[in-house]
Image (cartoon, rainbow, N blue to C red):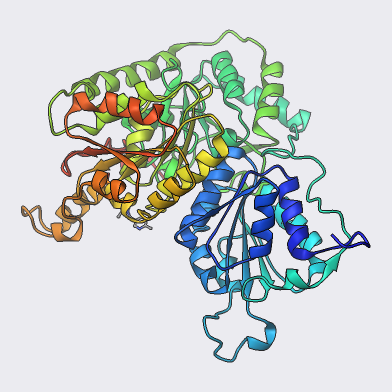
Length: 566
Ligand SMILES: Cc1ncc(C[n+]2csc(CCOP(=O)(O)OP(=O)(O)O)c2C)c(N)n1
């Protein structure tokens, strides 16, 4: 700081970020070195990643667990890689803030080395993206990027600084206090309660329903509305399905828990939601994944939708009564209005039977005691091993389906984060999640196909002492894709498998070469002790579980075509 009480932009940025209470930022050299060094001095640890995409995923994992912005940084030529890493936080509604450098305006449009236009790269994956041409603009633009990232619906934002490494902030001075926000709040930053008339109308419709199902989504999870969802479900005898992202919002073993609905689901939830005469969506985007392409429930179903983002109300279901407000706060008020009515328990009992029958049908695989290890057994061991406040971070594809259907969560303390679609997301995201998790333990669940993407971050985990437990479901291929390849190959044995099979890899040997402890598991009895060791360690541990490519994950139940207008 100068005698006049001013400071240059690099220092301002470090002080402002540190002032928010963040503990880590994620980057690839060469960018904003002075800011990064100063952040370190101020107690914010810069985590050097091996690719910009991994840095973005780390910031995403950090943001999802902390409920606060995660910051990632890259120099000009890394901007495209960083932007590609914002797709998952965009889809997963996570407040990641990306900071990049770009070459001076005088270098644009004239074949400059390493330079392409950044704005188009970031336009599809950010709510707000702006160049920063001077230090004097920095405080205003950073505050806006911060506010926009956190505002409903939370999503990434981006600032693109003048100079290859963001050098502009080295130059000018600013006298503004290095403060970004008045008070540090988690998502949701505001908790507006819906209008009383809308609540009364919703209560009336809900009370008139005899077969009510609730579908709670990522917005309900972000709002920490689990207890309120459960209270309303109990008052109305309504089974509760969730999106994959909201897995574990209520205890998954609760008698009203129907499981995950949509395309990444086991059969019960879709059957139950399709059997309802009214569906209450809570903080749910009603996208193709949770609705099985708008067939669960059928498109003409009567809907009540509680949402913090007005643009989501009635987006896909025309027969919707909207209630605009924060899910947790609005549900609390709705429950007061509804009170404790006498309700027919028939639909809830029917739903519980559907779930119990399905669980019973899975028991042989859950209990399978011989090699090759069944993934159902692996998931049951994860359920047993995950601490009561542990966080499970799952990759996309089968890793999402396996964990979303076969791992049970206590709905009180445990956390669940999943890739919003990008294969390979979970391992770097789990590192960021661990940085935000404090003493809570983070377990990453990934297939080998997903894990290959960011193997190099094993080195980051060791160097930065990030004590994550990584489970690799190692079936030597893209297991989820086997069915599709077989289908187009006319089910001829072996035909097309070169599209999806890998050679066998011992990931414990890979881990060891990075200095990370690896435990190989080939027999079901070895899973529990390995998970126990991994979870007890205060260093990263990789558990390489050898499974087979053939077994299929649970498949979604779909309503008959003629029963759906979608
Ligand atoms: C970036 C990206 N590329 C491709 C896909 C398509 N995809 C989804 S799941 C999957 C296979 C995943 O294999 P693995 O991680 O080994 O898990 P497994 O299915 O074997 O359990 C693929 C290729 C994707 N979701 N994201």
